[in-house]
Length: 303
Length: 310
Image 1 (cartoon, rainbow over the protein chains, first blue to last red):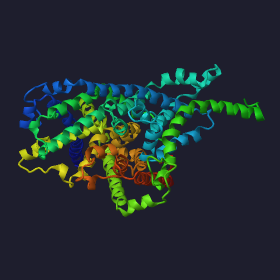
Image 2: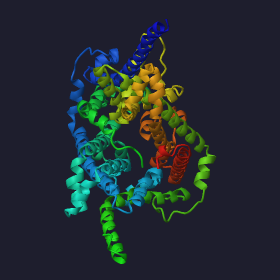
Image 3: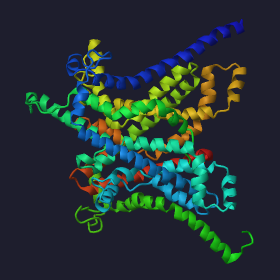
């Protein structure tokens, strides 16, 4: 009797367990993906259909009108694209070099002062001087306004990435570098010829995170780019969207007449612009996300 | 090497280590410039900073900037908002991240698992600029999806951008929306490290899935949870500037429920207000973070030394 009862109860329990899991993941997953779907779909909708029906899950009229509008004046968005691409490439390479080289040195057991120097770097994650002294240093001393270094340097050496690199390289067998030392190889040779080639998973992960950071950066551009031609892609989008919103508010409050035909970006045009900005990420996402997932498991986060 | 005695050994020692220091120089220079020099700049908090005079020529004013922040009744609401939002993010975040990690780990259907794991990871990949644009179109009063659904069901929709009440919940929700996918992967990899023999033993003893989750998986995740908590503690008085700036920004109506220390400091910097006030708020914030992380790490060390951050 007892076993009978238990056998009857178990599947119900297990069913609830599975069902809860599927239901929760499905709901949250949909909440995460539907907004993106809507943005893409409505960027291909005609403005009149958007005004009539609002955002619809199923597109009613297909139209490329919004994209035509975005690319009628390709100069500004093209320049922002170029800026961001350039900073992403240079910044990622620079930060990879700094993080892995520093991580490598601090992982060397034969370096007697490694703990002191590790603390020197780690301390910056515990305490900071704050935004304002940093900003004044960047503008008054380093003259960051409207320069590429303003968009590259602030993110060139993330200390956490360096710590991940250090932990990763500490796991490389000691014998590899020892035998190379006996053969007379210097530290730089060991780093470039031995450690970097076997650290490809590390390089992929840190590189991807760095590249994502540079691609998505609007903050440094907001602080330092006063000229339009120095804007990063994300800040360009923010600029366009907030201008559009401000104009829309002025019109709806009656300060401006919509009929004056100022070049107000339409809803579908804003959607199209957002799509152009996130396009590379959406296209690359299926390819690279598994590297992110893999990469997150390397390098524990202990200082 | 062992036979090289006294002075000779010292020289070799110095030479060997100086090679390492030489290779560290780029990073040392970087950190000195961008982290340690601004630390010296906290002296601004005690000065009446004048942009044209510069840091050294500006007069000392003692604690006047801090007194202003307290007297003008800014410090407490800002601190409270920053702390409470971060606490909510940490607690809700941890529950959701651990929860989804377990759900994904237990899921048998491979394609469903893979697809939806990449779905919940997706918002992590966009900037808050794009996220805010996405969110605005969802919340749009006139023809946003949510208001259309509400109106379709016969309800009345309020304009959320002029109404403070829903924002504490919305902000927590959006933060989860953007961050849970990322966080769950960290716990997922921790789950992968749990010894499978424990589950096998539990199965033999007749444990069901719920029991396995609550008696094996979650207790084994505690070290990771503590580390993640400690990491978050170090930033507990530092708000998510990107999110608050893009979602709340300068919206005067929403500021009372969405103003955080970082927004205030940014406004002090971007506006014409006294930079000294902003620097004082920044120093106050850094100090609070520093004390919190040291304290949290100390307490964890007393209880379980293996779980500490440093």
